Length: 361
Image (cartoon, rainbow, N blue to C red; front, top):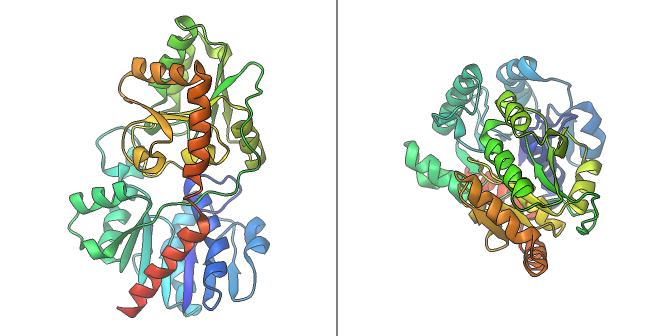
């Protein structure tokens, strides 16, 4: 098989989809070395690390509108020129004019929610291409059973065309040993409405004023849609000197945060997998997260849960962990055990199985 993979989301500032695409590209040739692989569109900075026997990397530096235009025009041309048997789009987008067999990963359908998760133009774009991928692609890969169920309930699509494959997690660079001075509660992810951060700020205010915890709150992630509302909530809390908004952090900085924090707080309203949850667990960092969407599926019994709609419940869940050494150690142990289930090798093997099924049809 000659498989093409669009990994144009792999750029200098890797977020969820970019991390997925990069790790998938690294592991596919390992688990299926007899195949030929063509990786389209990654930033040239990653080209050398992806090259190898049976692998061709067609790198380019494209972002924003330039990447969107290339996916609709350059990508289908290159796929034909490289004579790929199957093209896999690592997210919802796919070229409309591509006539060959194609697989798409749909990371979620939050764009179809009525909530204010995206600017209007971006929501319309995501909705249009997601609908097209669901209708035209030979198979759809989702990142959780939650997302698979959402798609099957909302769209007229055959069940046998939709496959749930969990993400993996990169090996941890150490084990969590809280040593922050002062200690801190960590959030990792895009700082946007969808992550439900305004109630987290309110829960943190309660913990500081009512429970007198010594912790700071660290938000690690680039600003997204709704950042102005979140910033206003931070300023109105009168705790802005206790809330550290880091912006995008490198992989080395992120590893240091996972090793030093007291716990990860993850309150997302809509999350189709929750990679930071598994990453934190791989370090043994206790996770306190929303009992909603895909998070219980991913975290299992290795997390402390709260109702994401109730800031008081969020604060109480965090307090149960920071105030109990026994509970902290229990979540530390369970997180290490739970995260061992999620590997990029297994993720890649399941992708190869989907490719083979599509090509055999």
